Image: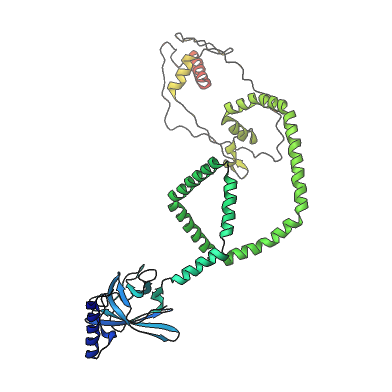
Length: 415
């Protein structure tokens, strides 16, 4: 039973309230909004549910104010709240309608923005628009959705799917675990290569952007390919026949190569000595071919022809040491007169083998008459030749000395 003391206390409170002329609405309740200086903010909601005046305004689950007024303006619910001046919020703060518990009362929750930096400071007269407000789901909405799932939803289908999966995996649990393990390794590999995949996607994005910028050029190229593709389509039968004939040709060629393999190898082996001789000839062969084109004249004869004449130049090497060396080192040839002077050594020289030269073909007749050669007298030497006296030779002046000197000069020029 309620004690008499409690009844008297309640009656006294009512009496005092009535005497003050205020009423029960003016009596402060425990846990209500704090008294003191405050600023007012208007909040727009698409749906305020059953929010009523005197509902709490909280920041981080701490009551900092109360709802003063709720009204409708242009199909938008507006809520005027009072917030203590000690609470500092950014100008782009967000607002939401929440519940204290499953069946508890509604309140307005203010918070700093998430995902964007805070700007400014919330002050008296500011408005929090619809884009920064939201509301939580009602218990009735949750129960209605659950009822829809339980009654007309897909639970029966889920049961069927579960039964079919159990039937499919029956006796294959190890294979299923192996597949799940490999899938886990695959996902792990993808996660490790996430940066490479992102770079590849970004590169593909840049490529698609470049292709998009060059869409007109690509379209013109495709349009230009259309006639060529039409010609290829018209000549498809001929191209197919050509490819088929090429296949037959390759078959025949393979057969011919296999049949003539031994003869080809023998021909190459027979050509090897000739190729070796050509390699040994080196640069002599092209020089000989160059001389053969102008035989019997040297290749530089064209530079000596002036008009209908040919300029000739003769160089005499009158080196006495060279002449005497040839005379002393070479024996007299058959038919030459033997010198009478004593003291000349005789050195036998080995005979050289004949050169294996092929007979030259007869020269073709010249189509043009050869220019006449004008003999050019040799200039006289300004310096007189010295007189050389050899030991053991006759003194010049008599006939024998003249013959010996002529023999020496003849042998020196031959040498």
